[in-house]
Image 1: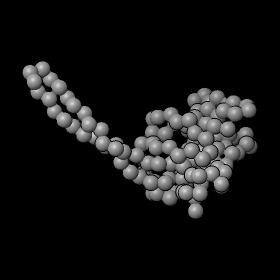
Image 2: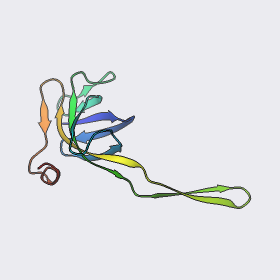
Image 3: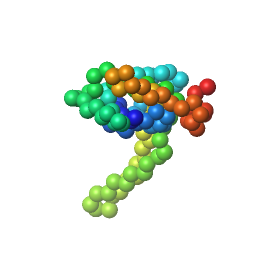
Image 4: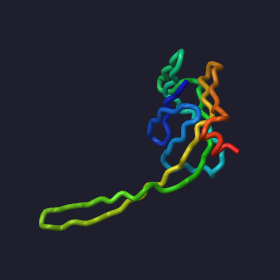
Length: 121
């Protein structure tokens, strides 16, 4: 089972055990959060939300807050003027631990998976 969830204005396709980077969230590292803006649940019986699937929730653990690698931006203007800029975006890493479709079906992270062994202790 997988789900499409909206976090910070962006949509992400997630499965239990996935590690995703999202816009920076105001939660402490190690906290467990519940995402209720689930737009779609896929699997044996797909559920499409209008705009969200009622009762569906995705649980995730905040792994860390960090900044992405530096992007170099060049701005050029007529007359030979150019300027170099750099940008590093803040992000939050989330580990998807559980997907609940609201109809009683739940998929949890496999405890033997690589991400579970590394981040769930």
